[in-house]
Image 1 (cartoon, one colour):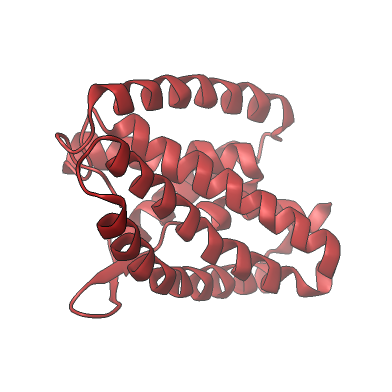
Image 2 (tube, rainbow, N blue to C red):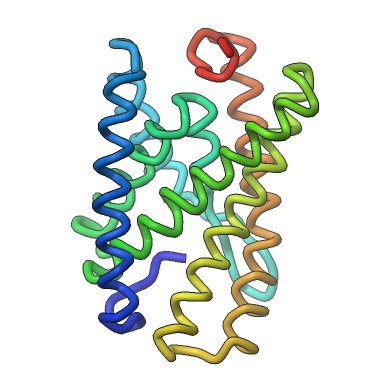
Length: 210
């Protein structure tokens, strides 16, 4: 889902960069006002965890593989604004050091995964948690984690179509078909990690205090 350089036109990656910069500024201001002191080092730990977890791929189908996105996991652990910042930090490091995703496309990758995936997924989680209650918090997180991958891949597909990289009838079935399956792995990993943390250190899960 990391878009490389040359796949997006300037009319697509330019606005995506603008939205990402403005969005990150808003996230940083909001997170700074809401976060407790202990959450700052936790953001660093979560960034390192997501970065490391994304290096591990699992097989999907037809020789393809997927890896953890981690947006909903970070948002449930730290809150949505801090979660979006964590994903953005991971994407920046991956781009600048490991060339995973292009520099011109970095704004689009942040938009897709930090905002649409993480914040969109968290919005779904918040709604499901309200409907299902805290006892089914893990089920809400699993569903939201799955949907976050689908939302991010949908946005990525749309950007490729708008840039003329691939036609709609090719890119959407290909991207969504694979990422619907990758989302299952995302849901399983998110549920496992949250379940473990809730057992040993429930005070570290931000939404458990709400």
